[in-house]
Structures are given as structure tokens and as C-alpha cells.
Amino acid sequence: MKTALSVQTAKSTVDIIIITFNNLTMLDRCITSIRTNTGEPHRIIVVNNGDQDFSVPENSGVIVLKAGKNLGWTHGVNAGREWVLKNNPAPFIMSLNDDTQIVPHDYGWLTKMVNCFQLDPKIGVVGPTSNNIMGFQTTNHVHLPPAVETTYLSGMCMLTRREIIDEIGPLDCCQAGGDDLDWSMRLTQAGYKICICRRAFMLHFCSVTGKKLYGEYWNSPQQGEEINNWLIKKHGFKKWFNCISHVFPKQENEKESFVDGENELALQELLPIIKTGNKVLDLGCGGQKLHQDMIGIDIRRDGQLGVGANFDKPCATDLEADVTRLPFETKSVDGILAKHLFEHLIDPVVALDEWKRVLKDNGLLVII
Image (tube, rainbow, N blue to C red; front, side, top):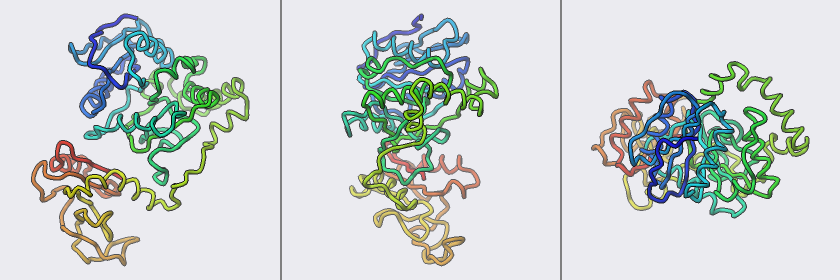
């Protein structure tokens, strides 16, 4: 393994290991999104399995390890972890797919994940939510609390304590695509808990390298059967079933109502800035604002009846406006809530650009 750049940056909280194979355009977008939208001190280690050269500027905080051949994803993660553990490792180590991106302005995504470890000393690994992922990490489960225990995580993104890697050992490379379930089961058997940080989200374009290398086999029923059979042979049927059946403790504050759950999640994010008297917008507020101190904005005037399921609910508008043309000065808004707006927008990109315009540099955007 050759190191293209080994400049030591300021002490990091997290070492982020990214595996790539001839996917440099997406890799560059991934790294740029991390460097632009991450407040937590971090160091990025790229394991380049491909033959395309990937260079980075001096003092960029990015270290490139040239594998010299395609090690595969699991061998690549193991090699990256091994290098990190020998080169001034951070307290936390993350493995991350190169086909992921951090949402603009979500500067606290990594801090939220790190903070989950403070909830319980037995938490061994933490993962985020995503648009394209398995299990309870999908964005559909809005009724779940901000941090929830589960039985497995996707290998797309795993954050763990440094010392746990030595204790649990490297990823098992015997079955392509099954290493994340296997590592999750090994963590559980060692007495550790697996946590989803539902306040952290990242975009996932999914299977970019897998499809390139394995074709239609990747994520096929055949691959799924082979993974399950391998896990059963290794761990036994009962442990496999407990893992894949999503068994996890009932949460005391779990909401039965879909709407109540998503409202609570939004309030947890926005309430700290609402309470300090900042300017926080509730876009498309409809018949009820999330909080009385928010500015309710809707394309319908105050008192006008809604449409569809809200046909009998008068609109609670403070300000009648188009959410793609907000009547606010540039960088004048502290927070924005956009709840179920995307499915109604003709051009979401235009809307995002407008919201970015009015938000302050440290402003908060919450999208449901």
C-alpha cells in the first residue's frame, strides 16, 4: 500500500475511510461535500482500488492510499483501518461508500453521530439515515426517536470507536455484500449495541461499484440467498433470524402517529433556535404551524380552505408567498422547515437555491 499524501492535519475526532474503484467523479463529489459541510474535525483516508490516478492538494486533510490492485470493498476497508490504527488514529473511525454525499448546510451531521456514543457506553457502532438504504435506516420511519437501537447497519456508512475495531476484528471478506450484516452480528454477540442516528442523513446513489463489478448479480435475489445461507452457516439460524427480522427494544417515547413522530423530530431540531427569538419559517404551513413563534408561509391566504384531505381546514398563513420566491433579504433567516413540500414543487432545485439564498451561513434547513 503506497501513500500518496501523508501530511498530518490538526487532531481529528473522526477518521473517514472511503473505498473507491475507478469512480473518481463521484468520489470527488463525495469528498467535496464532506469538506464543505462538516463541522466536526476529521481526516479523510481514500483507499484507491482502481488504476485511475486520484491526486489531492497539499494540506487538504485527505490522504490517498494506492492499493496497486482492486482489493475489493471489504479488503479495502480492512486495509484502510489497518493504516489508520498505525498512523495517529482518531477516537472514532468511519467507513464510507464513495457514492454518498452530505446534504448542503448540514454541518452537524457527523457531530450528531459522534454524540450518539454518549447515550450508552455499550453502543459500538452508529449509522445515519439515507434515501437508498436497508432496514430502519430509511427515511420512511419518521415515528422512531432521534437515536434508536437496531440489529444491523448498512455498510454504506459505519461509525465506530477505534478500540472496537481491534476487539471485533476486521470485516469478513468471504461473501461479497454480506460483510455489514456479519459485522453487525459480531458486535451484538460481543455485547455491543447498534444505533441509528436518525438526525443524520446522507444521500446514497447505491450500488455504483457493485453493479460495475458484478452486473445484475449485485443486489439480486440470488446474491441475497447466498448471503443469508453464508450467515446462517457462520452464526446459526437463530442469530441470523434475530438480526434480519429487525428485533429491537420498544422505545418509551416512540410515537404511534406518523404525523406526531415527524413533528417531534422537526421540533427537536428547530426548537433551540425558535426559543432564542430567531426568524424561523414554516414553508407550506397549511392549516397549522409547527410552532406558534414560527412564520407560517403558504401560497394560500390566511383563512382560505385547503385542498384534498385538508379541504375543510383554513390556512394559518402569516405571510402569503411562493416558496420559490421568498420575500426576505439574502442571509436573513435563521431556520426553515419544509414539510412535505418536495412532492408539490415543479423544480425542487430552484426552491433549494432560494432557501439557500435567504438562510444565514449558520442557518438550519429541516426537510421532511
